Amino acid sequence: MVVSTSLVATMLRSASSLSDRAETRLVLSRLEEQWRTDARAAVSAHLLPNESGAALQLADRTEIVYQADEHGVTRRESSAAGNRVDRFRLRHPDVEFSADARPGGTLLRIAIRHSPDGRRQQSRTTSIAAAVATREEAP
Image (cartoon, rainbow, N blue to C red):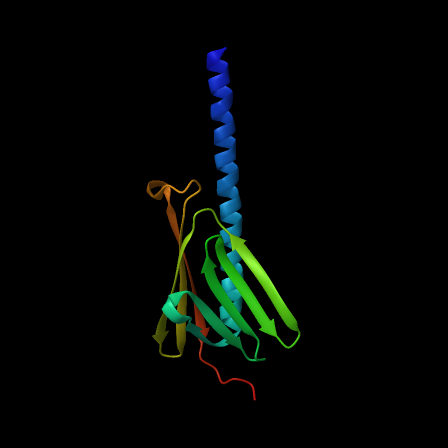
């Protein structure tokens, strides 16, 4: 009886762990797609103070700001049409933004170290890079 109870508990923990990993992959995939889409549409980009995030300006004057918080990454879009907020939630994230100016544009990166259970020895780092080409803004 003890063995079967232990086996059931182990199977439930394993299923939960697999579910958490699948959810994390989905969130990171959504973030990666949105980050690259925004970077392609941007005419300029810069890091926020203390590298706490990144701001992108689109040709139509829409501003998109990505910022790290204790729950993951938040994307705020402000345009003439209104505002929109997207949250990319991760368990125990450590998020860093960086930018490298290059001829013809800027290479933006988000590095996210995340751990399903908060233990650093089991953390994984995902790096997402996107190029923002320097273009003239619309008048």
